[in-house]
Amino acid sequence: MMVNNVIPFDPIPLEKVYVNLRSVERSVDLLTSTLIKRQSPAQLLHWTLKALSLTDLTTLSGDDTRANVERLCFRAAYPFPERLADPKDYGKVHTAAVCVYPSRVGDAYRALGALKRLDQIQIAAVATGFPSGQYPLHSRLAEITYAIEQGATEIDIVVDRSLVLNGKWNQLYEEIVKMREACGDKAHLKTILGIGECGTMVNVYKASMVAMMAGSDFIKTSTGKEAVNATLPVGLVMIRAIQEFYRLTGKKIGLKPAGGVRTVKDAVAWMIMIKETLGEQWLTPELFRFGASGLLDDVEKQYYSLSKQLRK
Ligand SMILES: O=C[C@H](O)COP(=O)(O)O
Image (tube, rainbow, N blue to C red; front, side, top):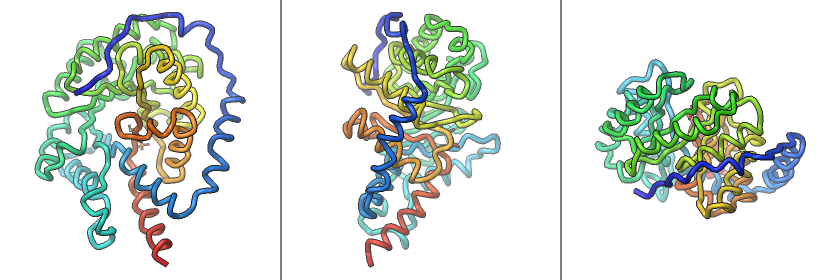
């Protein structure tokens, strides 16, 4: 598997960072609002299926069981029931991944194996003391090793927000490097910043940069458990960091908005923002994902309704 490699810590991209929140919000509005309104039903159907193919279908609940992980995997592989799906879509369209707690990875591995979908649908595991990250480093690293042994191909780590809030960028870098090493080339590393707990947009930008230098394949907004989760303005700040990192290193790093993305309308706004900033080349499962537990419900609803409109 191709994974990002670590580059030496460089404090220069973290100097003189300034984020004007008003202008970020204005840019988001300019980039998305008119374009969203201009989408035809056929384009919306295209975006709906695109959103599906970019989703990490997630269950991260205290009452997760083998049975509900099996149902999740079945839905990831067959999102639309046969009687309601267009024959060209049935069994062909699916989510990018399922995302579960480390203890449920084995269940997902067996369920996707039984469906013969292990080569198409990735298994992502949250790890490193998700959602707070407030655990000793050795146990956080052991979780990564365990999840990979159980069959995870993607590891969604959380950063220790106390390091971000105290500006301990070097220490944050060192920790993420160890997490990258624990993943090796067996799993992609997605780094959750927990943006609702990073304090400022400047911190979000700096944490994004540090995570990319430390070898993350993706930077991810949120755990879904914070009061503020994936918002478009925070997404734009992370996109600017990805663009700058690309300019400096030539490396393309992925983005994963997660937490609170529930409707196709939300998803379309994100995808349009990506298309208008990073470009369409970023809209593939290798470089863009939605982390969402409920988005698929609306994908289903819109898929049926738009298909019906187009048949008339
Ligand atoms: O990474 C995924 C998030 O935990 C999902 O959040 P959500 O339940 O708000 O969609």
